[in-house]
Image (cartoon, rainbow, N blue to C red; front, side, top):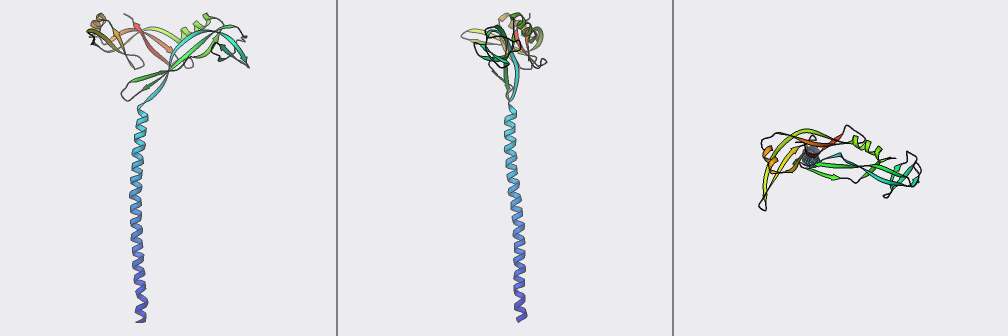
Amino acid sequence: MNHHRKRRPQGNQGALVLLLLLGGVLLVVLIGIFSNSSLFSRSSTDSGSYSDTAVAEDTALPWDYRIVEGTVGDLIGSDMTVLPDNDLLPNDDNYATGDKIWTLQYMAAHMITNSNGRNDITLTGWKPIKSFKSEAAAKEDIDKLKVQLNSEVDLVGVYQTELDGKNRQFAILTLPSGNQIKQPIDEKRYEALKKAKKVNVILEEVHDFVNYDMAYAKFRGWAS
């Protein structure tokens, strides 16, 4: 009898160990399920936000140049201010306060293309990038950065609308950069372009002053 009483606790202990093992297995399974669910959730969210940011593409483009007459103001170290806007430029030509100069100024554009292929353009302010002793010297530079040429481009199509009893005609063109523009046209050109696939236009190529090979072409009129 005494021997039988000593063995009963060992049976209970075995059952307890088995129960603990089963509980541990169940806990591991539950942790795995919740971990997979959590990972799946994070993956979906990350994928969604990546998709949102990938939809809009921001491209910086050279947009325009101009020549502005100014006066040298304060000399600050090796730099100078240019009046009347107090723009700061390197004083490379050893100008003195009060000298008349001409500056080449630059404007850039940020073009954002959305998921529908529509281009939204935001223009920067004018920024002086170089100074000249004469207007003629400044024009030599700007003529290399802004180049007009005749080119053949794709004609997407023409269409006509009516407003207040008057007809209005438009042509849609694809420029070399790939973006499409809409231009009003008269009725004579509308009839001439109805079946056309290509048209001759005047383009202005605006080159980047740092990377000349990067240029943006803008419509400047009809070549014929």
